[in-house]
Length: 340
Image (cartoon, rainbow, N blue to C red; front, side, top):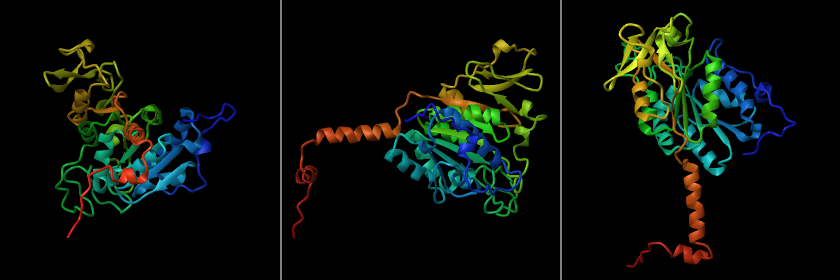
């Protein structure tokens, strides 16, 4: 990957395109866009090294607002296109920005297979638990009983858990952040973009038109301390307004405890972002029974990437078939004689 020449200093403004940003006023997508623009100059790459890919939905406008290469693809197929881009040019930094409807409904097959293949890309899953662009139908992450235009009697479905799905699929970098916390977003996004392999970042994002306040329990100053736990590798899981609560592992189950009431800080579970079993347990922590984890949930940089394996196979095939002509190659496989 070519780095930015020393005499060129990129800033947030260098990643701002000439397109007017057209989201609903107050939409959480604005904060995510700001966070991405602020973070990219810190990675030390040229603008030409980045490709932003999207599918269909409100978040799909993302590539228009970034002064980089980009593609606005069709519904549910952003990851298929991103796979082709990365295989064609592994040096590119490919980032997908899309919503829970696009990635987890029509596109869920591509999402699962991308996660298991460990393609070196970053997926920003903007989860607002609703279909915003099509005006408020329930999505795969909507809670049971959600009353929408497509479920007037309430959703009969249970919500899909994207973090648990990512763990089960073998994704090698999994994190969760908030649209309103630019500091946390910056930390998580930089880690994700620097990870060698597939990175999935779930972003709790507010759709203030069709699903306003869906994540206020996790994003607001008065509710966030008791409803979320900030994960730091090697640090105990402490949360609460007074930092007086924590998470312990009781046999095989997680449990919320009060520090000083039968448990001390030394008894708390210490986060290990390399532990896949722990990552699955964390994915099951849902409010109000548990605080929901924020930050890097799982990271394994040791696995080979899909594009490295594919290009390695191509080079091996070239070596094995070196010096052979077209006719010899054509007749080197299994053949059948077709007769009357």
